[in-house]
Length: 382
Image 1 (cartoon, rainbow, N blue to C red):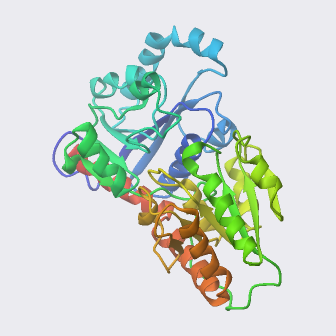
Image 2: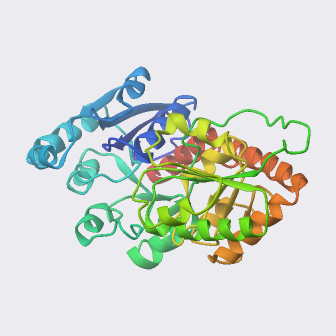
């Protein structure tokens, strides 16, 4: 498949991610499931045997190269000493299975040392870039070098135009090599027709706000708490649930001083996310920096709209007034304004719920995403 028309030939695509937990393994798993539903494609995997989703990967019964990675700093050091052997195993798997396309679905600590063998095997390479620049708090110089986009990819998948522009501006990657393919729900396929329930008034009780995800400074949780305090001072009937892992010491005094805030300071795996979303009316993302958010796509799949700040790729995922609301700026007052608007308009909330479902099932559908990736793969081969 090095020339001519490959449109009718079966394409062999390998999804490669050696991370153990979080969005990377789940993204890879959902993409694999969707690619299996596509015609004229054979799917292969290379994943970590230590992945928290390894049994789900094995249940797919796809040809898979499992790589023993690490579970701690000590084992990371020890296993990294075997990187040459690991690279040879990866090369042999690609060569022996005559893989046409390798999609690095998310970077890993070892990825940069392994990418050279992709072209040597005869395959082309796609680099799926979740963050062109690491988030504040994650961007130490050591880590940034390992996780920056690969310079030798044949095509780049950015999840938002915002990240695509960063690839061009900050990494000197030609715009024609960048394709925008959005992130799908990390909770499942979100496929099928939209059958919204008849519009009805929201059940009695407060408007249920949800902050969900890792608690890091750039997520702006303290600004959401300030906005919540403003709304409660007005007598507005709202509640707030904060669910996610991370250091909350800086905000706990403010949380304790306010009523109707529930805190679950724990890591929530992707297969448990939907249960959290269904307990909320609206998810709020008060971020100060963002490439895009997997939380948005997953919340939309559960029929939960979003309110966000106008930061990074978030306004690309949220269409103001259709599936959510975008605040004027990052201030607590701007967030409070959009929450207030929703709390006082049940009809708007119902409209946004329906719009969230439609967005998940049409724009963020894994079947559409996988079809777009196959089209890009064939274009790279040509």
